[in-house]
Image (tube, rainbow, N blue to C red; front, side, top):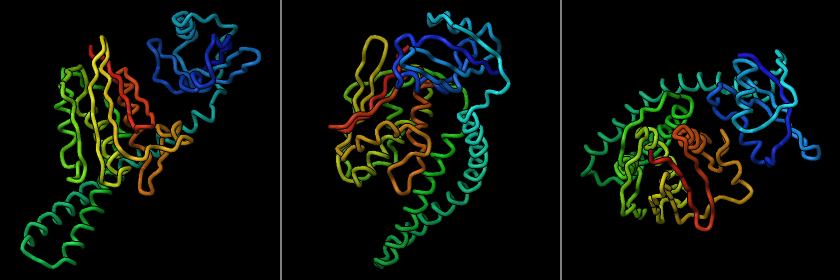
Length: 296
């Protein structure tokens, strides 16, 4: 697909809003912003775009009410952002292959250890039980990291059906909630058009992060708040929160505050929520992830 450079006024956009435009999915005309340069003093934006043709960019500008100073087609607009995207794509393909190859033997190890644990239920050797727990925990941690990689690099079209959010939440909580964690579930239920498997990934990632932040001891509250067109999902935990200077980075690929994290869990959540035409945000005091999804 060809590349174009255009120039126009900023139309009141802030620098923060401009950053969010880059690498958004293509709009209905097939236009994607690859890079944006802006000059606040002169109130000017210069965009590097990938688009089917010049006409599609003109239609894109008509939709948002912007008059363009110029639109130039160029074959030289291979930006640092695009190169980085291509590198991520190649690394993603390799990671998916390696992760898939590792997942099966790890699953066998985990199942074998569970069988050993069952067969030694009457064995009072504390050292043996401790070693079994160490192997189980290590295998589970590796499986979680592999799942993070696969969830991030594997994309497929949404399979939208009418689903109960309570049912999706229940399914995502299986086997991830320790006894030391108190969880308060929503008193109400909401049915929306969504991909249940993808939303399970969102719930599971955020709640697993909360458990780790609370060091396996604390409380998680989940709420469903219904507006006219949207349902707001709040996931609150009693953990210490995220340092204020790190909040803007938490949805960036490969960013993590955990020594054993992949940095892919939250960016995967963001991608899934945005695929559903929703949004996700975070705030401290108390620690809350907020997800807004259309009810449809």
